[in-house]
Length: 357
Image (cartoon, rainbow, N blue to C red; front, top):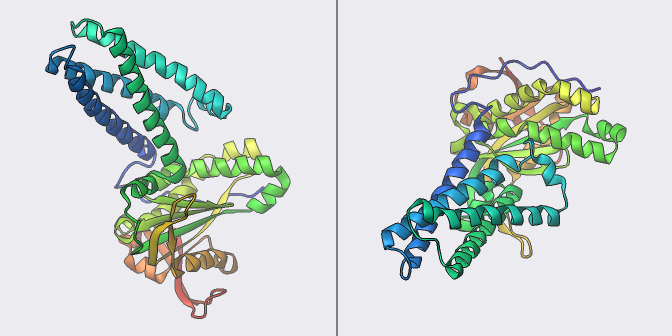
């Protein structure tokens, strides 16, 4: 068994409650989708009004359709059909089965709104052709939203947004924090549990730390085996020493889940981490599969610092460059490690061991 290190209470949260951070993000996304659907529905209603209803009445019906349909379907996609929800087992079905079930359910919801709403507004029901057209358009827009949600979930919402907007179509230099977090003892756990249970173990760990990352406004850059890489721009990471706070919140959340890990895996996950700040080149790469990547020595250095935690016998090492750029570091206990030589790097780097007070 791999016990968790003693975890001090995390620093007081002044940005957002870590227990509600993901909920707030989901709710904001939900409101954006509903607002966009209301605008689309209103425009569609104006077009449909040429032959059926007065413009204002048709726009009102279209807006109500957009809000009602998006409210129901976005609520299902964002709040119900996710890991950790009551309906998470539906996600375990084959993809074709999930698509078929969603199609049947969503068609029913869309049809109900299209047929019933005109009567609620005192209008005559849509003619058969117009009703079928409206249902088809609504399902098409719904399909676009569902696909966008799935893709953004795979890529990360910020990455998906940046790809859509073409922010990194031309490479650009940025100063970024990179936090490399490693799950302690995962190799031995994988040998004991086998590959399937080891995957479930790591999946449970990464799910448990999602709230702290969201609360500290971090962006999950990638998962590398048993390691998670989190990044912030310098301006996003500086307030409240968010990268430091993120790591200790991650430890705190895992400590609260230790009974779950004991029962499910006979192991408790511990964490090691390293933080570094520097300039990277951010840009899109790939032909068949596009991705936004960061190139620069800062990432290699952060990875080497994480490896140095084993040699130094500490849980968290941060470079002097990162510490000097952060606000509110007096909430943490710092131990000067001096100039650390790092494997594969000619020049040593000044670093600190960090603990929560």
